[in-house]
Image (cartoon, rainbow, N blue to C red; front, top):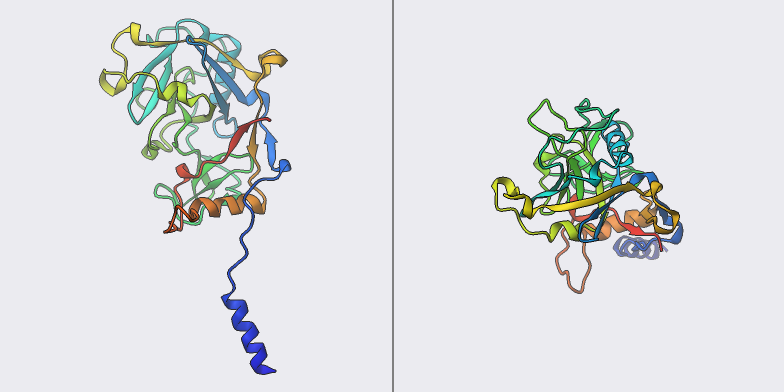
Length: 285
């Protein structure tokens, strides 16, 4: 009897842990609020949709919503900088266009936040922080203790600014189009993420001036309009969903990103960079 129990215990110890399914259920997809979606239309007719992050930078995002409501980007603005493997930047290239009323020109720095930390985390320490993980509402995070911030990963959107103490108003924005420049974390206000259309920015011609700025206005890519989805006609309004991060299926998804499976992957990494495990976002089916 004792021998049989020992055999059973040994078999239990040797059995691999069950693999949880990482595929989401329909209920795992959560609607992004329409007033968090900002749609930029370029002169070539292509659109770039940014999901705004009001919890990360409330004053900057409030500025951005006011700029969109005032149609500030609709005239005299463009994509005027394309630095290879770094950023695409847009706004007023002359820096002379007046801002509408109610805009806070240089808010108090909104580079990191205090509050509830990530509800799901990667298993390894982040190279630029103590931890990296995911917020309850589907954002990537990095943090130290209870302090957290949005990391500079591909497609993330930040606020262009001058030298400190300038923090930028939100009129000048950039999107990361290359390897995540994580040294910028906590030095610039991060206000969102491109959820659709990043290819229309990353495929533009590279600027040949210093830091990738275009040398002549003829090289600029004009912006035709910028609207919150909540201000668009219902028939043309885009809808997106983020994946819920507070269930075992998302935990299994994290494990799958940290340990890529055979047959192609033969050596599991045992961890992942947050920029290689960006939380899924999709158009609403």
